[in-house]
Length: 162
Picture 1 (tube, one colour):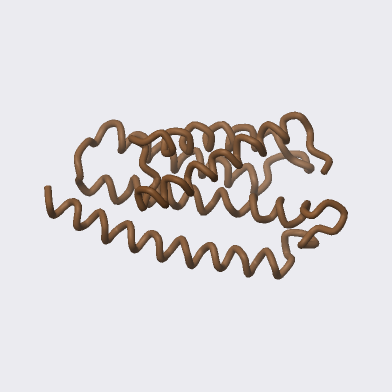
Picture 2: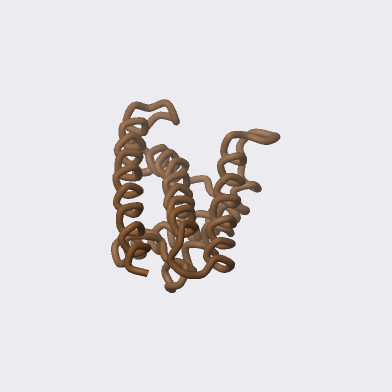
């Protein structure tokens, strides 16, 4: 597959972050930083995003680097809101959205790299412009929007109770 040692490390940590996010979303309906799966998502996504800055087939800053930095900003703000703004209040809406949005953004390079590498020798896609990648990302975007609306509604009902 032509991965460097950093690429292998980045991939393993990234897959673990995605699994942790999925577990948290299934169990809690959100990426919950108070739970082990949420903590794994946060720390592993931070490491994955930072190691992405050292991975590139072209010199200089590219869209992947910008995406990685955006993800770091989103999860950092979400963590700040989680740590400093306790209780069920309006900051939970932003925290939930930023974590879910960071998860969606992390799926963009994941889908692209996976579809362009697997199966080995006969990958599913032929570059980032392949229609299969576009359709897959569109489906994931629709799921992200639906999930965000459901999270908003759930948090709104939680906030009313308190």
